[in-house]
Structures are given as structure tokens and as C-alpha cells.
Image (tube, helix red, strand yellow):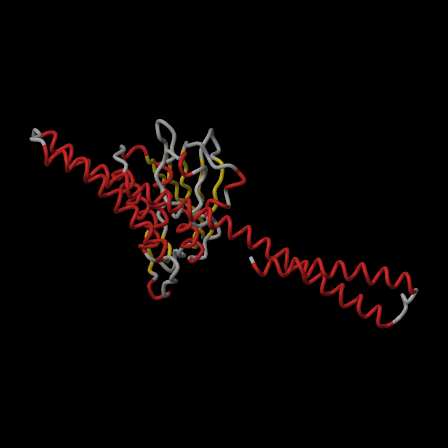
Length: 298
């Protein structure tokens, strides 16, 4: 803040000095004097440098303000995500402690508490994953992974997490190998399929497709029938802490870290990820492109 004020003050001083020199030169008719032109040239260079400095400072300030806002949203989101299952478990435990419940109702309470624990576990895992992706893995950790098996496992995991029928997530998968870490691939596609199921319409429709392109790239499309993403936000959603809408008005849980994890890991594998419109009706398609292992190397 102090630096910005100093630069603006210097900018004003230069403008005033520049005007004074121009008036002085006009009065004394010394426009051709070497001293006058030297001072004017130096002032012009300093003016341009200060103008660039002020512009950069303002741009960085806006970026910092946006980051602070996203971090505030993240804190509000995580606080809500932590308090909700804890409050729910506390209520169930107090009820079980104070009242004699029939076995069937006790089983329902235990099942609900287990769901709350899984919700907390998922939240903690996502925050930890966001920290881990900052550290690049050693290339020696990479191995040939059957991507179609990873996608099937991720689809099963997410269906179990949300207690939905396995048919909700349809799969069309060509056999394909990629060179990566299994854990990284799990993080990428668990996050994408989780988002697809979470934000899908009613009834939910999610499709996961894996194809191999002619230029030896594995292309995965995760498609849902939700509300979609506005065009202006399709790049921004991959930033850290970015979520659509206002935190207190959201009806879906989340931290704003999932797509940041996806983008970071895909980029590390020399791949690409982008958000697209669904070809038929409302919804979103996340397309991930990764280098595939050549069949001669498999």
C-alpha cells in the first residue's frame, strides 16, 4: 500500500514539474536549450516508468484482492463442511446416550454417523491432496497404468460415496495405457467424476468416455447433465479456491480445490484439461488429454 502511494505521489510531482518546465520554456523561449531538452527527456522516461509501475501495482492489488476473497470463501466453505457433520454426529450420539432406541433405529443412526465420518474424511483428503500436488514426483515413480481400470474404479468409488446406482455413471472405455502415478490418476478422475455426480441434474446422468486419438493421446471426457458453467468462468474454475456463486448461497458441498488439483496434476503429466458445453442439452464436459503409451512400448 505504501509503495503504491509513493509511486502515485511521484507521478503527480513529475506531471507538475513537466508542466512547469513547459511553461518555463515557452516564457523564456529556450526550447532548443540542451539543458531543457535533457530534463524533459529524463522526465519523460521517469514518467513512463512510474506509469508502468503504478499499472503493475494496481494489477497485482486486484489479483491479491481476488485471492483474499477466494480464501475467505474457502475458509467459510471448510468451516461449514466441518461443522455440519460434527453437529450431526453430536446429535446422534446425544440421542443414543439419553434414550433407549430400538436396534433398527440404532443401526440407522450408526449408518448416518458413518456417512458423516466419510464426508469429513473426503474433505481432509482433498485439503491434503492440494498440499501434496505442490511437490513434483520423481520420474522414476511413473509406471504404465491401464487408464480404463482407473476410470472404472473411480466411477465405483464415487457411486458408493453418493449412494447412487452404478448405472448413473455410464462408461465407454477403450483399453489404453498412460505413464503416470496411479495415485495421481485417482485424484484427477475421482475429482472430476465426483463433481459430475454432485452437480448433475435430476435424475443424474453422468458419462465417462475414454478414446485413443490418432496422434497417440488418451482423451477422457466426463459429461454431466447439470446447470453447466458460464463461458466466462471456464478457465477460472481451475484456480485455487474458485467456486461458482456466493458461499452462503451454495447448495452443494465443496472447497474449491478439486479442479485446481486436476489442472496441476494434468499439467505435470504434460496433458491438457478444459471445460466445454455438453453437446446435447444443459451440462458440462470436462475433457482431459494425456500422452498415451505407444502400443510397441506397452
